[in-house]
Length: 268
Image (cartoon, rainbow, N blue to C red):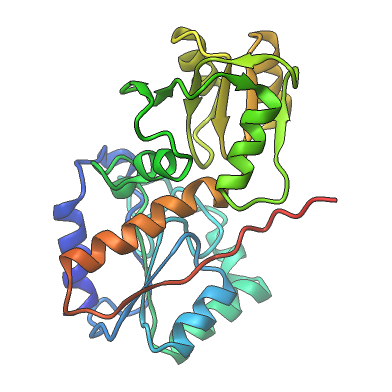
């Protein structure tokens, strides 16, 4: 199978996207390259690209972009997509050049599977994160609203940290307040929308990956909503691990492995 063929297959398998928001597709590498193996990851940083090359996995399927920019449909951007006005500058950085050399030297193809996986039925980001947290059977609304066993905010935050393998976690709110319902998000979806949805459903707290502090945390505080920010990588890693297992079930003859991006968060 060639990279372009897998790209087309993924587009057919994924739920429909909004064209003006499309960011999925081959970001770097030769679309005509024959696939020797697939490395699934959250974000194709230098370490991931090196490990994929060392393992002989030349198709890197990632949720996030390779050259530090979103949104952009690499390398085929046109008038239908948001232009990457700063892409040349990012490609010219030592890190951008090093990634380009790795991709060229090892004949890698980097594909972004973002929009297509975010809402993928039964496997996608929200489904996988809920399962990782042990909340698969306590969802009370299709809007990703959950009613886990009532606990204090600090206990809920500690539970999330433990289930996601984190040594610490950031949250905003009264540690002793009871949490009866919580909204679930991942990555960086725009937390004003998160807060509006959570308060609409009567949630005490909202879980997401990362936010803009001056805007989103302060909006949550003014709304009386606690917010837990577990990190972009940590909240999306379960989804990409599920993506790897889904691919294995659909492409059993292909060598497919998960390469962990490694959560960057450290706490003292």
